[in-house]
Image (cartoon, rainbow, N blue to C red; front, side, top):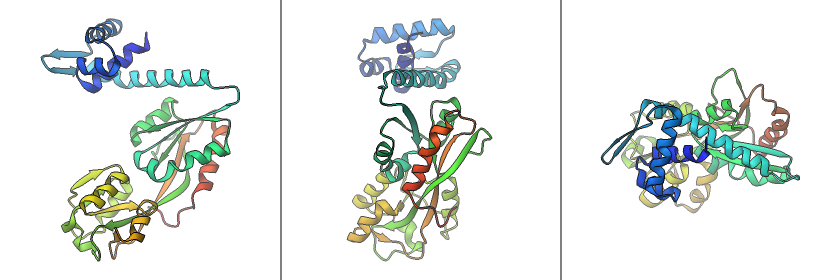
Length: 288
């Protein structure tokens, strides 16, 4: 099967429009239609129901999505593996949730490259569920997570921590006043979500819900409000007086984990990399 058929299927799935998919793939609309028909002939079932201005996935199409994504990902990894130079004798496919890239992982990539000059690094940003799936299918070596899954196939190791502080654009704000000054909810994982529900006397109704602390920071700075942000990110704004700590709310420290397949044949290669990740951050003093 041509990999282009699956790429076209994924793009039509994403856009739900043959014309837009054609533009994004630099193809004609008739070429996209031909590829989808050809793919349907190969799998033996319809993948889309076609109505005027409305393209919907069939049940078979829904089931094909994860398989198509894994095949494309594996093919990309195969191309990368073949193209690696003689000097690069080590590969690392490193994944993490969105929030950890901006506050934890981004700064570690140059350090990893310096520590392992012969290593080729590939990165993936996704949610906990998809990263876990990638680990189990073998398309990911390490997943950096806040809430590691409890699966017998996977092992985990603490590699550091993130300190979260409740900051606001309003000075001298107390915890009782947060709800009245536009709370921005940043998703820091299940344990964090359960924790903050106990910190306030009444439930918080966020004006914005996001998985990216950078979006929350920019929103607070430009619009106003309060949010739990990493101290490493909010620190300069606290020092300049643009942001303020909310009184009587202690920092919340979240443990960061490196997760990998327990019986992976690559573990001997991953072990020194995990150790380096541990060296880059201090061990947590308090965990959830």
